[in-house]
Image (cartoon, rainbow, N blue to C red; front, top):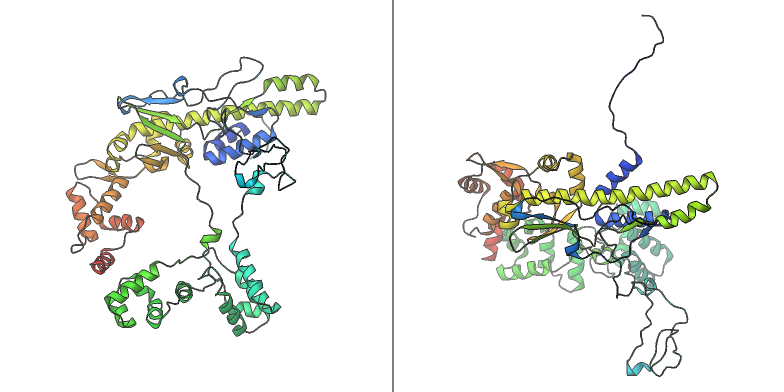
Length: 513
């Protein structure tokens, strides 16, 4: 074969991931908190971007909602409309506030310069204020403090334990062992790692480490620095002076308690039914994870991205939550002023990049809001039975069903439904909740897997203590309702809902009787 040079023309199609496209895809899958943080970074980085602090338009004047008469999806024009600039300033914006203080409200970081009217205070005010009689006020603090400096900080478990260690142990070597033990705690407050390995690392014997461990196990909170669950509960009971031989025997046989083998426990502990019930009640009152009271992260409430309301005529109104989307605009007036004074090529390039980035951010935010509203409106249309009658009428739904209806790709729908929540008359649900697998029915119809799980839960809740339903019985009952399902599927759904087996439920309900 001869090696020659030649010219060829080829025609091909390819998708190029431009930075703007990557930005739009990235914004689409962000949650409302992540989006707010991202926009804040852009506001700090780009001088042409600014926050829109104007009041939101009245609900009746916005084209923010998508009306679904009789459950059918209307025109999802978007909860945020992109307007071309009509003046020196670009008014393109997202119809969502950045949780800014409204007119008449004080900003979060406002100085507290209120006059305290307590008679006992003698008219004390913040520095710079005036007293009750108009005289210059005296402040307890010469320097003004911000709100962040006034907030109290939750102490960490490590700092709390180290403080007690300094007071309880004076020997430097034992303090070093105690610090290593405290540093080996997991998130629940248990000591991890091998004590023998720790002793070898520190160059001491194992008995010395165990002695220090016994000392630090008496620290607050009770139960911390235990090596297992049984020891954790024993430490808490000892702190309450309730660790008697019968209770110690019960703690040594916690697997029997988990399996509800009460007869064996009564023989081992040497107690009757009443005493065993009291002992179990005491154990349930203990904290199996004592460290979570200190280092547990604060629970953040779920803020819905979409609001669903029913009109008086029965139709659905789908709109975006204006409190979750930032309002930004491009300052064209500032751009025009700076562009007139820009001379160097690098400055002009930087200014042009900032303008392009700002415009693309505004358009990406608008596209994100419009896409979310489209997907939510289609979900409401397809799951109309759920919103009107409950979970038993939840129909099987896939990403492809929604993607084909709104003429978008499945990956786009997947990104939209991730970490997005909808507030409905039945509660707040993640958009992913409405996508469930299909289970065949005996009449050729299909039902949602979520509705089947709900039926299984209801059947188990309504079962009689003397006639506990086994998985095979549940299969028979579901088939009577026209749902063809295998026994292993019932067991899988039951375990996913953390419902014990029929044997364990029978033991629990017999113990209650």
